[in-house]
Length: 286
Length: 301
Image (tube, rainbow over all chains, first blue to last red):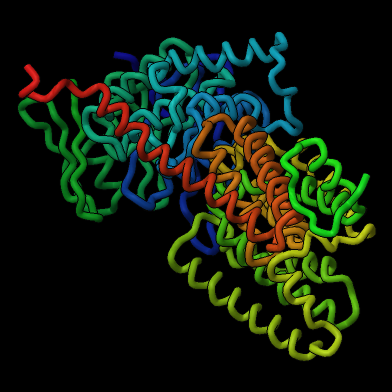
């Protein structure tokens, strides 16, 4: 099982330049501090889950790394540059959106928008230039990668949630990003689709060696691939290997109340007593 | 060439075409109608895609107040239509009504659009002496009465709209389908949304000359809706919407020229008929396929 570089943010490990570097970052929305003192290094190819209760600021952390939100303190750099909106080195799948049933645009066109949808002007229609052929081939390749070739030419509004999600992941992949930022890509899918989409994400992480930052409510489907978890709760962030972070001591400190992490005999880890009253189960392999 | 008093189609297409394009007012009507059909088809496709058809309707209705208000102060109705449309576009954007319709948005847009109709009614009443039959032109369009100045305006504005569309179609498509990802990729989603509404206001102001505020959907939405039902490729859909709009306009003008009934009625009816055929066909097609594929009834064995 892969393991992370241990403690976050010390920056003293001898690994090469981190692909994402977050230093003492804080975000405020209005007068409310969402979280602060976040320090995190992400190495190339790392697979990281961002966990925590609803409203704790998991998506906010992802958006800050994407450069979509201003920091109130600290700094974030991506590939050695201050983070900025529109960086093609990051592929982004935002929190669950589904296309209306009447949106009659092919999935292939949606994926293609990820490649050059931000460019002004229109390519000459019906003329197959070399660049056009290369772009089409690239789109076809990522569609194959997520296993969506069978339905990529159907209108996206008519596809199931799992099929749409695969195409949206393909859209994020089409720029060949070094980082994949996925915001709850599994949470609105049924169990069968959760498993298969998680499998797609894990396979992509291996094949492309992109660093994956994945916001999740339920970490089960991705746990086998996980290097580290970032746990966001009550304005604080704790980073570490899953076995270090998902413990009674760490989570109780994070939540400020007694939270129990139970190890069931079948290896499952169950977290009980979270303040918002929902029970999240983590499937352990230890 | 001889024009008889009783004009009717001879069903000799060449002769009919010569008669249709003989009069200057018909040349103007065809020119203006064609340009309006082109730009209405383009912005109409995005309107359908963005789920903003109700916003488009309200722009037209607010434009009614603008047109009547402009006549009140002696200005061109096109100017009034456009200015009122820009105000409405800013309002729609500021109140966040431009997104996909929710019930609350529907109510807000409905309230605004009724209030603007009331203002139009007031302006009309105040201007009654000077403006009488002009009301029909605003409500239902008057394609056979478009003057040279208006044709020139429609040509230039239409040219500008087409240029803008070519430059911004791709980011606008991205922002319309997938605003979150588009924003993350650096597409100015909000600015494009506002810009789109302003261009829509301009197109509405121009199209009202041909088809009027009440019938404007026939060129703005119906061709785009038909195209959207027939193809899933954005570029093809836009081309199809433009082509259908031109077809309905040309047919409507021809029929309205030879028979003593209003052009707007024919354009709208042709568009509606095509819409019914396509929707009906799309409903029937899968059922027909299933019927053909179904195994023969048990008794047939």
